[in-house]
Image (cartoon, rainbow, N blue to C red; front, side, top):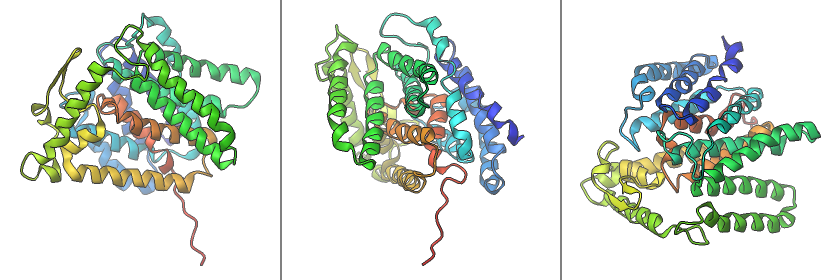
Amino acid sequence: MTKYLPLLDLLLPIAVVLFLMPISPSISSLPATIWVMLQLICSPTQKRWALWPLAFVVLAMGRSWWLNEMPHPAASEDILLIITSFLAASGISQNRWPQLLKTIPLPLPLLLLQLSSSPWTPNPTAGRNQTTYLIGLLAIISICWLWSASKSKLNMLFVSIPAFFCIFLLWHSQSRAGVIATAIALLAVKLREEHQKGELLKFIPLAAILGISTILSLKFLRPSSVISLTGFDFISDMGRIDIQRCYLQLPFSGSNRFIYGTGYENSKNFCHQQVTSGILDHAHNIYIQLWANAGILGLFGLGICIYLLIDNWRKLEHSLDKFALRTGQAAFLYIFVQGFFDVSLIHWPITQVFTGILLAIPLSVNGSVTTPDRS
């Protein structure tokens, strides 16, 4: 069955289509989690002792994920699906990554059928921030594909279409978090490459112009709103800052909450903030949310995972395909930068699956091979 895995990768763009179309977003959970389960079952022999029990977890908790029944916007099941997807994708061979990544933006032309006035929400049931998070990941993949494509005119023309379309969709959705996180991720990867080539000083002026233009142009995302020229929305953002202060204090508010937080199922009972768009009942910051829900143990666990990823990127950097390398590093930065603005990446199973898959690139099969010590 392993030889059919590239064909099964089509489940991922199918999930994208179902999530971004104006239908129940829960439908998209089915192909996304089926991909995870099949990847677990078809994992390399040396990984099956761990990944086959995780396939049982996917099947046993299928109702929670496919029907999106866990408490929201943050639940312990969210983290479990991200880690399960992460481990499932760690069994992908390095030579399969480029083709898998190129299949994900395939459904983009279908979005032309439902473009509407700005601010555009592809799927109102899923929510604008949640759908924009996924579009931002598609933008990362498409732009890195264009960046790494061969220089033939025909190929560049073909690859540039999804890249520019994703940029347009980000702007059309008027998502400040999506635009900022995408720009930071791509610019950081480019700056690092220029530094490695010894040409950083030449690129810094262009990077500064792009960065300043991105910040100033945030005002033009919503020209009739209260957003300042620096992109700050005084009403919405001040409400978020206030509720984040409340969540930051929760681990200090009760017995042993500093150690393991308030839990995922009842934290919304503690903090609420009225804003013009409604009532905020989560931290709009994945790190503050984790701190409130899981305390110092949760932050320590996240730190272990980040260290693991950075350590493996250092070992793998010079052996991966350029497209997969740039996409993986930019996605890593995008995911963790986006986490400062919202908890969108843990809101729907499809976004959890894509988060886990893209974070796993440096742990792919044969990816973390270390050179034997010959001393």
